[in-house]
Image 1 (cartoon, rainbow, N blue to C red):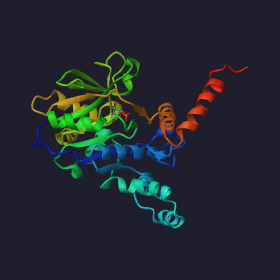
Image 2: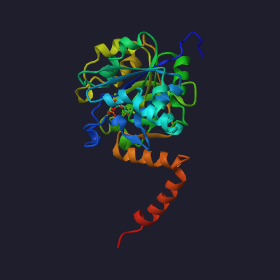
Image 3: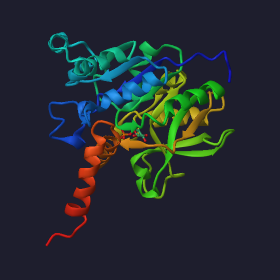
Image 4: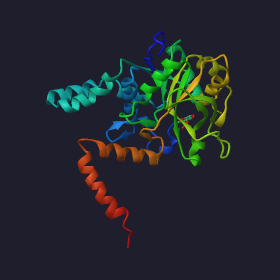
Length: 305
Ligand code: G1P
């Protein structure tokens, strides 16, 4: 490990997306505020960044995202009421999001011009150090420390690091897709090419980019010059591709993740995440699992009539 490299302390979380896959729930509530069991999805993401040592959080927000700011701010009225009642347990739950990160900053994206544009909005805050990007739709199980591993890989090789996961070839058109060759360690590959949401038959592999990145700040310069790509949006994948194929830029590596990931941006994935995390909870799990077992065998698997 190169000890001259700086520890990564800043994480950027793009949250300006409209969440149209969850309408009407997301008409007046940001999709990031939808609860997975009893915590909004965004809180899991911030917890993950903080656990990996990145406790300076910048959210790239948009219109109708105020509840996110309120969630990470104090709520004196609620705190005082709970303190007066002596309800320490609920008080701790109210205060947890506020006390999580050293600082949560916000910048507005303005025009929704894509993920690459959202990341570019972070440039003045990030400055000239490597930083992490976490997409809220991907929930990584807290027991599988992916981001910590990505920071280690960045410290070793420099450049940028993306999280990759092998997916069914029929699903690759939903993701950024990486062409890779082996690198030093078992879970690490060198990214040689990238394509955003390849059409069927055009994917160079079944390695999907999942929503975790550790980026070299040179990405900002590339993003400034990146033309709109897939969907008419400025794509982070296209900017990373430009770095991956350039001989004079830092390398792009991939960490191949084989742990637990939940796609909470999708209704089915959201339900799966909720059920799995609820089953594993100490407080709710035993009762929920026993109900679920009965429900599945009695009401779901037994044919009706
Ligand atoms: C974004 C990225 C894509 C990546 C995906 C991971 O797409 O553009 O490369 O694979 O996140 O979740 P989105 O799902 O926001 O359209």
